[in-house]
Image (tube, rainbow, N blue to C red; front, top):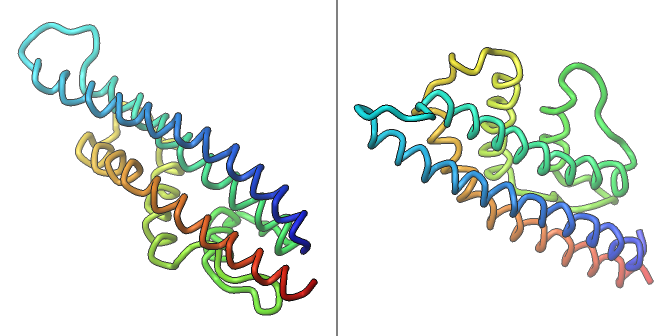
Length: 172
């Protein structure tokens, strides 16, 4: 892959990271709302904890969707192979966290992949149960994790692109 191709892909990834930033801000806003609604437990409110958990759940779904779009972009462009089959979301996360010899270094560390896997599993749960069955504590925990992972995702992607550009320069 040439430096020019990498710069195009990086620009697309950075555009998706801007979307991810907006989603992170929404999660932060909903966490504040969760605290407010929780503090008004005895007062009549238009929203209850279940409603706010649904908002957070939808934002977490969007958060992982955005991360997954980045990974699909990289798997398609760099690896030229997107996993298929029923377990493709998990397989994609594993693929992205591993070095592909002769092709690319790992996109993210296995530690970050493990933490993102929690969000992937939650997304699957969120899409397959009724919202009122969400566990408030778990949703709040994952929302806080997503907010804290945002900078790490950006950092690891930046390191990946720096390494890829260095490899491209060596090949030129």
